[in-house]
Image (cartoon, rainbow, N blue to C red; front, side):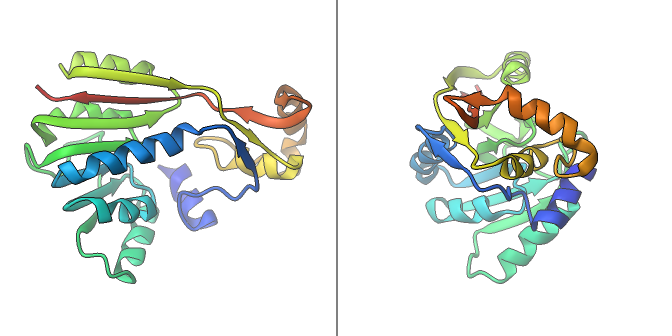
Length: 223
């Protein structure tokens, strides 16, 4: 939580600062396309780990009502400020965490989406109506598989994406990208120079500085 609060203050929200070029079809784009196609069929939606709320508000035009929650108070502060300055009326932002009892009613939502948010949202199936859907995108699907199985979700689908590559023009932009990746230290600091050089050597693709995408899109239903 402290890391995300810091990112919110430093970056003005859950957003990256690096200049980069993505080659190939990104799983992030696929996820957004799938979500936009799904949303009109649902009326009460939960955005798990909404960050500073920009994506939540973007999705609000496609459905009835979206509540976004995040465990970072700084992120929620930004999201509420953005909402107040907009004309959007079907979005609400709440400071909450999946680690404790959540401030929502049983069966309050017919869709929960998790865009790189906490996979532990799957530990709260009570929030979904029977027949409700959950969809998410993450880099590590291990905990997702376990939670989906343990909590009795059905019609589980998991797609793997590993073709897109993010290229960086120089080591400074690469350092910014790494520094804005959840949990990472600030690789722009002089004392991290050795670590940055090692990572630069590790991430050479086709003679360029780049990172290959490896993400999973998953969806399931509450029986």
